[in-house]
Image (cartoon, rainbow, N blue to C red; front, side, top):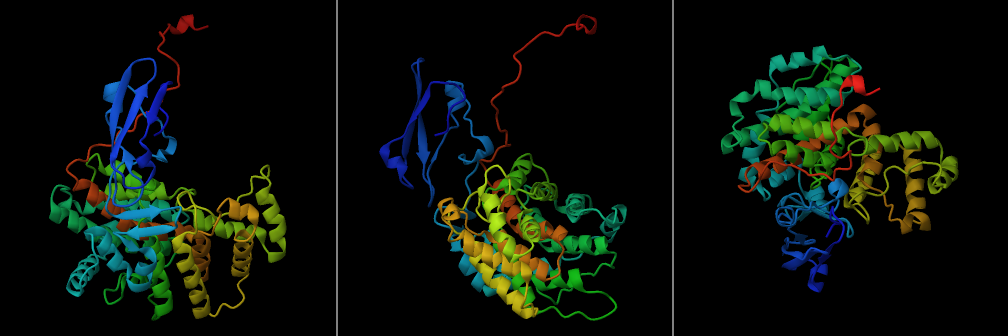
Length: 452
């Protein structure tokens, strides 16, 4: 139980509650008042149970205090489960390792949206639904001309996705299941087109319209790299690598951007506005920009011979030098996505004929040190998914400014799934976090002439 916002509050949990999935109750007593409240303990399918604190304020006049919501469940969800200590990531119960090996990104998208993996017939119908929505409104295309050429692609993404509600307002009744389905198709299908065009605009090349004869990841790479002047053939190895990258970033439980989407959606806002809010949240370097930070770190190190000095600075608490791409807010063990990304990294480098990649040499040596050095092992600073994804994307010729955009393309599926689950929950209510006020107490206003 979190500390209360008034002193003298003590929460007592039964011994059984220290395990997982144990129903029961917790008693909260406010010292010196004689007030006490029994709170239900609600078990999940797997993972920690939660103490239901909804009656604490109305019955005791207390708010709970949990900076960053690190120990608070703001919702219940059936979509994604993470066990950070064990390094487990499940989507609808399926391990991420199996999904990345055996499924396409659109299969995972169907899974997140609908709760189970599709049959062949269901997959064919879903694939057609996405494919038929890949083009964007031609007037929306003109939005790009209003941006500077050096505008950050994430700024373009946020604006254009938000503007979709002005062009696709025929299906914005969030209480209508058909409208929700159409909006989901539109977002999943059109975001890659919007992202690819943001890149094309930034480099002054003509927009490439989507090709419906290509797969999802394959089509995205085509729109990113093809030009009208000559044919472009997408490498199957690179298409599969991109598909895996999208799968590994599709959803990650109630992180900052997903919580933003849910909070915006709780007001009844349309799905395009909610996803635009998620993209804006993802833009932050502490969230979606981590793989870009890894490349910047490797570039600053410069050479394998400089690693010892760099590691020494990382260990020096006064140097403020951070080891990017290692450790995770949730995972206190090896990030289950990192091993898949490492394998994909080597496949991409082989396909592109890159045998001597200085950044990869640096990455491998850093990984070796960090996984054997007691300083990092004791702190559980294992490589995470961002450590290798930045190298892969750089090898594929994708600029660092597009890294977070790719993250948004993948995460749109998770966001719209989380939004859909929230909207369809009859118990959902508008989000309204509370606060511990630490400002001035009530005071009177004096006239301007009397204030000296």
